Image: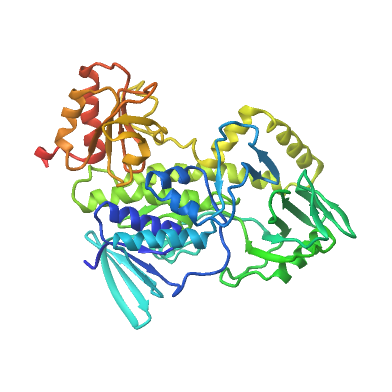
Length: 513
């Protein structure tokens, strides 16, 4: 075999997958068709659960250092209206202004540190598989060649050749509209007012937030504390655009003129991007030895969620692939990738399609719906519910177990502060290596002893925490909880349950392998 896993695509999903595989002791080979990283503006930041996961891998500080501006206040678009979380002391959703190009730089640097091989300018033209391996036909700068591996992961975007070649259906719809985004600085003839409106000399006031005209939708995101203003237009169009050809300022100003009916002078351009919205999800995330992740597996008709979902796909998939390659995966483990991430994708699809309905309606009933929805979002409980929806923090994986098993099972690990022989640390500090972890919060020697038969696969750490939620929690490499023991649960109940969870997720005890 030339590699353990061929990863097709060196975007955020493919690079994250390669890093996670390498942490798990697997040899990935990344093949990227572009010879150089594209400078075309794409995603403009990260938000939601992936920020917590990056912190657990020790990468969040690098991402923060690569940011292009200050962290914005927690205000987010939702279907043509605004979700304002600034009045919450602990908002459920945060964003990081990190353009995709810089995110890819951070992940590529980390991949290099881990020894990942990345071949740029190498396009996969065909894939095949048999019961033992997968083969990729590749066209590289020096001609065609062939590589083989145990598995192949298609992280090659919306027009995925891997998905098409594997014969995986990609049903859904395409919204008949084009969206254009610009981040700009204005000359002195445009003033940002305290409420986020724009005062334009010779025109008057352009409202902040979203404005619907007869010709489309205009979005203005501005603050008197920042010189950079975000402008967004949506127009009904059916034209196809080449994603590799960047949008020009002239194209954006033409769109702005059509929607707003006037020109806005621009002094400096920070970012320009154009995109269409699609609502599509692959019917299968796995077909034999070929798997899909990121945009190859799902396309969502709203901004701010695609990278979050794709990178979380990668983290869920990597440790399961590694367990299979190392020969210690329990039966059906790799199938849980589809079983967990496909429903997660469907839930993201649910709220992004709801945004389409809110955004695209133009009759009085649609205006009434937006007005009612905006009124509901003035209350804390709807703000928290919708914020968690957008962040992906409401995703809980189904965990097998007896009725009434611990409520933490399947959830993302809470942000616990731990006191141990290593000092005061966060639970994420124990997850940098992406290894499974049994976290003993009650000094339970019986549980530590039960986990001893998995000592080469599962780390064990004893610590105390304030208001402990459980006596012990078993944390998977993707930071989801596989099992938890209730506070003061008896050994007769907790020890067999722990051994069952360890076997279910991490294979047979070492003496039985």
